[in-house]
Image (cartoon, rainbow, N blue to C red; front, top):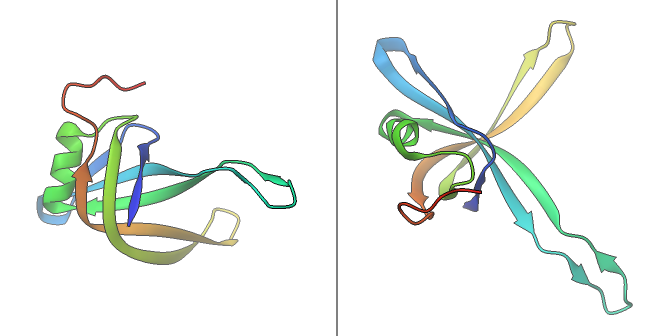
Length: 110
């Protein structure tokens, strides 16, 4: 489960048999805090790659924009590929099973 803000406009494409798939970059924040010994731990932003399929992707295509706040529930998927130099790279994605838009309707995004 993640609650975060969309970092850039979603990328939407249609694959085999017209199935819609959307990719969203979602930023989540961990608040900063101070330890008992006075050490300050700064705020930290984590970026997540979220993949949405079919109807969820179609909703993203129509209604989700940069800055919108989303609640995502899904599963973590890790895949690997070889880049153009033959080096194995790994990508971790959240495959969304449900999504809720938390930005109030009509609110302008920063």
